[in-house]
Amino acid sequence: MATKNNYFWTKQAADGTTRVGLNDQGRDDLGEVSFIDLPEVGTELTKGGKFLSVEAEKAVTDLESPVTGKIVKVNDKLVDSPEDLSSDDERKNWIIAVK
Image (cartoon, rainbow, N blue to C red):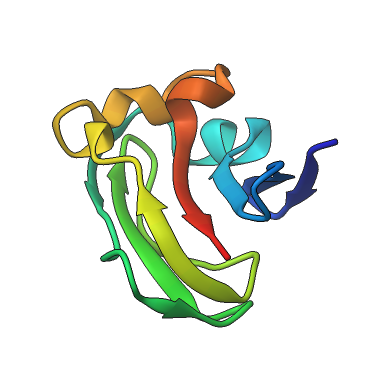
């Protein structure tokens, strides 16, 4: 079951990781994303701490992490296709996985 935190949904996977992606509110408030500065695998996140910078149609902003944990996977496709964040398909709009 997915939960929402500000601009993000989080979803627990069977392998114990949690995926984080952009939810409807995030897509609505930001508009079309044109650039994303992804964090590195291995980065330690703290809930509420800055983890992501985006340039979008309606805002250029730093976003806060909805989770605490270590990044174990990053959706590298977003670097070349940041518009995937505007998709409502969780297979495309996920950003990171943490453990």
